[in-house]
Amino acid sequence: MSKIIAIANQKGGVGKTTTSVNLGASMATLGKRVLLVDIDPQGNTTSGVGVNKADVENCIYDILINEVNPQETIQETRIEGLHIIPATIQLAGAEIELVSTISRELKLKKALNAVKANYDYIIIDCPPSLGILTINSLTAADSVIIPIQCEYYALEGLSQLLNTVRLVQKNLNPHLKIEGVLLTMLDARTNLGIQVIEEVKKYFQEKVYRTIIPRNVRLSEAPSHGQSIITYDSRSKGAEVYLELAKEVISYE
Ligand code: ADP
Ligand code: MG
Image 1 (tube, helix red, strand yellow):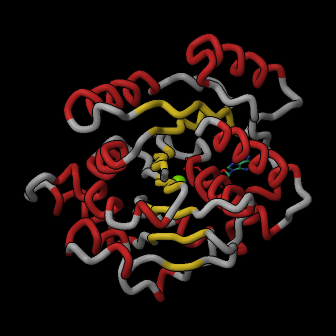
Image 2 (cartoon, protein in one colour):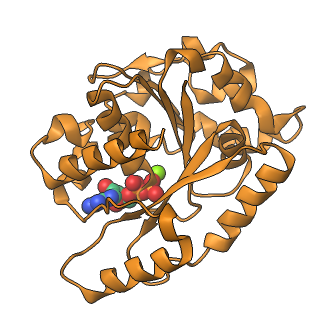
Image 3 (cartoon, helix red, strand yellow):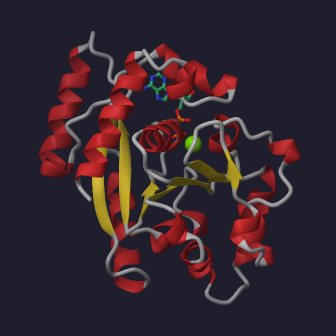
């Protein structure tokens, strides 16, 4: 059985892309077959696993708009078992172009149905908005992981995200679940982090992952080398925690 997980939060810079790349890479390292789907026009997941965007012939845009066979867009990465459907800046136009198409919310779901059987996990890296690309992702997904940065106003904007999840459940995808809430970028030297953890746990209770992602310089360096933390520095704290998270997510199968 394969599981499709969207990584979503309309706030930028909370760790969606870092989590998509490194959770995906960790799951593949643990022997799972994983497909990353980059649906953010910034294409940071794409470059983050070493795919050169200039060389991409067909990307997620062509799946959504030109009905290109998803199989023709899938690329391998340097980690065995980790594949990606890339995104390029071309995707920025999709939001507007989709407006006039029939069943525009279902495009990604239909495309992923065609490749789903080849993977244990499909991880969708959402853009920082609640527009049609995120709606497509939540409609295609079995569940959503919400990364929350350990900072002031951590919970701000979450009611909008949860409202969107409810709307999708009601109208497009009744079986969408919240897979888990992930605390990211914890600075262990401050009390603030501890306060945020308590606040988020009070709100989401058992949905909060035991694994908390600390700030780790190696995690922020890896993307500029086109690598996940697993190949960039397998002995770093960042690699350790994302492997731990992968085990936790896999255990909730
Ligand atoms: P999003 O996809 O939600 O916009 P990113 O994953 O791109 O967020 O993270 C935002 C920035 O923070 C990036 O520069 C990334 O490298 C950095 N970052 C993310 N997680 C960590 C972490 N745990 N430790 C240090 N830097 C991080
Ligand atoms: Mg991102």
